[in-house]
Image (cartoon, rainbow, N blue to C red; front, top):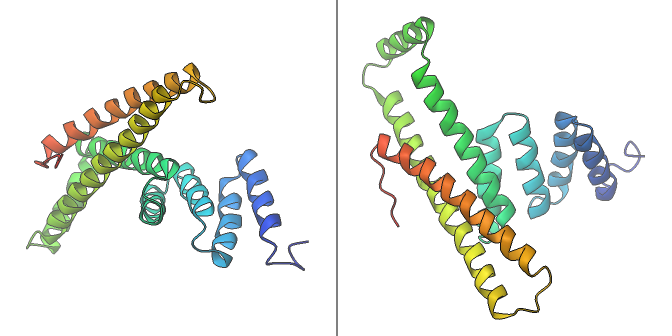
Length: 197
């Protein structure tokens, strides 16, 4: 069907969803790329594409798409969670690389430094790390604000659907966000980044 009707968004979405449910993330990502060609500002497609990139281990690309969704919809909790998770994963990988540097990595780093004597590569990496930490802490603050506001609104209206379940979920989400914030702050102190709260 898609050979004849390449612009059928519903078919691309269904095919992408099927691929994703089967764990075929690369094929699912291709389907959502096709959807984004036809509707580049669709925040649902952008979010799903960011999540698929996360699943494929392409954290930078995932973070870029999630950040784009947040720029379009600042209160999009799905994109904020993706942003937090991709940032955390990137930071964990960066820390693991620093701690577990093998001789080969040390030799490569020495060669890189010799080629780039002015140190701009290291400075750029440091700046990128600081930007990532600011982005992460901002996403945690924004998402915590969304949950706190929703919880306060739920307490005002006791007749809201979900009742205690919603408040339990919100409280659990806030605890999880607090753990992420502690992680990001610990990394920020390692590289001298202020929280900016």
